[in-house]
Length: 123
Image (cartoon, rainbow, N blue to C red; front, side):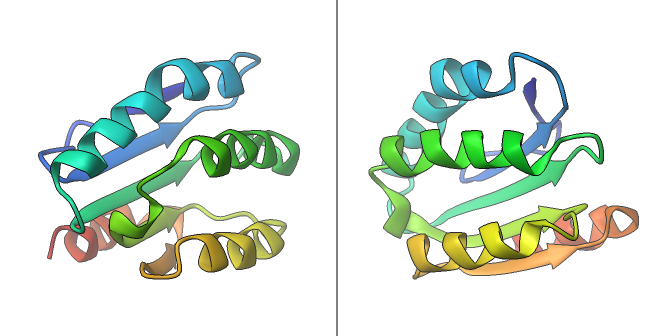
């Protein structure tokens, strides 16, 4: 399941990725269209914080990524992306994200530093 985080406002979107069986379907049907709408509305100034559930597998993250790369038409509009709670196996997917979001500053934060991630993403 993917939920919008409470601190999401305007061009700053926080997504909490929670491990469950409907993870990729939820993203494709609900989250992806909303991200596209927000990116189009705030052309060139989209900021995204992604909080990863420690139970989410790399396979699940790749499924989400597969949906994202085919559905995100405004990937050049992202200027900052914060990934909170990254897994050790995240490294390879992180390299792929950097090449896709080539205009974005992408940073990783430990789960204990989520407040730092919000501060960075908002400023």
